[in-house]
Length: 567
Image (cartoon, rainbow, N blue to C red; front, side):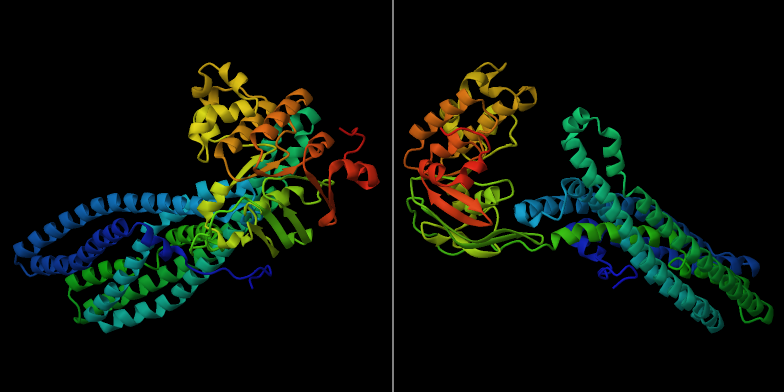
C-alpha cells in the first residue's frame, strides 16, 4: 500500500513497450551504443595527444583516430535521432491500436468504470507520453553502462579515483531511486485527477443543450472543475518532491566531483599521474556522472511510467475468452434466460430472472425506470455477460456460440442510435446488410426522408441534418438490414410520433413475421402489439402474459405506463 492507502503500483512498465517497435528501438539502442562507445575511447586518445605535446612529440595517429571518432559519434547521434523518432511514433501508434482494440473487446460491461472522457485522455495523451519514453529509457540504460565504463577507466587510471567516485555514487543512487519512486506515485495521482476532469467535461458536452436550456452553465463549470484544487495540490507535491531531492543530488555530485579531481591533482603532483591522465580522469568523471546527473530525464521517465500505468491498467482488464469450439447447428431462434443475475457496482439489477421467448414470437419487456429492461436487452445478445445464470439461444448457452455467429444471429436497434459510416447508405448497412438497405429503410419509414436528402442514400452523414426521430428510424433500418434471426428493440421507436410509430409497427409486424423479437417498451401501444408481455419488477419477471390480460387484472402493471390509456 502507498501512503494514501491505495494499492501499490507496479514499477517500471516501460520495458514492456519496447517490443511494440522492436526494430526501431533496437536501432536507437545500437546507434546510441556506438556513440557512447566512441565517447569512452576519446579521453584515451586525447590524453595521448596532450602527453605527446608536453613531451615534444606529435601524435598524428591519435589525432586521426580522434577525428574519426568525432565524426562517428556525430553520425550515430544523427541516425539515433531518426531511430528515436521512429521508435516513439511506432510504439505510440501500436499502443493506440492495441488500446482501441481492447476497449472494443471489453464491451459494455468491462468499461463501466471508465468514463468516455477518461478513455479519450488515456488514448490521446497517456499513450503518447508512454511512447516517447521508450528512446529515453534506452538512453538511460546506456548511461548506466557508460557510467560503469567511466568508473572502470577511473579505476585503471588510479584506483583512488574509483574509490572516491564510489563513495559519492552510493548516496546519489539512493536519492535518484527515491526521486523516481516518489514522482511516479505523485504524478500518477495527478493523471487520475486529470482523467476525472476529462470524463466530467465529456459528460457536460454530451448534455450541452440541457445545460443551456436549464441555465446551469455556472453550476456545471463548478462540477467539471471540482477536482481542480486536488489536481493543483498533486502537481505541487510532484514539484516539491523533485525540488527537495534534486538539490541534494546536485550537492552530492558537486562534492565528490571536486573530491575526484582533487585526488587526481594530488596524483599529478606526486608523479603518479601525467597531465594527460588528469585530463582523461576529468573526462571519464563526466562520463561516469552521466547516469547520476539525469534528474530531469528520470523525472520524465517517472511521469512516463505513470502515463503507462494508466494505459496498461485498462489493457490488463480481462476480456472474456471467445468460444473456439465447434459451431452449434442453426436453430429457429428461441431465446431463454435461466436464473440470470446482474449487478452494477453494489446494486442488484436482475436477480434470478427466468424468461422464455419462443422462436418467431414477439415479447415486450416493460417495467418502471431502473427495473433492468435495457440490461435484459443487452444480455439477450451477449452484449453483457450475466454475473449468475446463463442466456441460451436455441438451447445453447451464448458462451458456447462463436462471437461472429452471435453477431449474425442478433440485430439491435437502440433508443439513441449512433450512426456509423461515411454516408447514409453505409450507416444503414453497418453490420452487414448492404444489399437490403433500401428495403429496410422503407420498412422503418425512413426511405421517404432519405430520398429528400441532397444525394439520397449517398449523402455524407456530416451533411445529413437528422431529427431525433429520423436518426431512430435509420437505427431501426440498420437492425432490419442485418437480418438476424433475433431482433432486439430497446425502445427503438420512442422518438417517433404516434402516426409514424403506428406505420412502423404495422410494417414490422408484416415484415418480421417468423422472426424472434424482444422489445423494450415504454408505451402501452407498443406492448399491446406483442404476443406476450414480460413485466419486470424487483429484478425478476413479476408477470408474463398478453397485454390485455395484464392491463385488466394488474393495477400495478397499468401504473407502469402512468396515465396512458390502453391501446
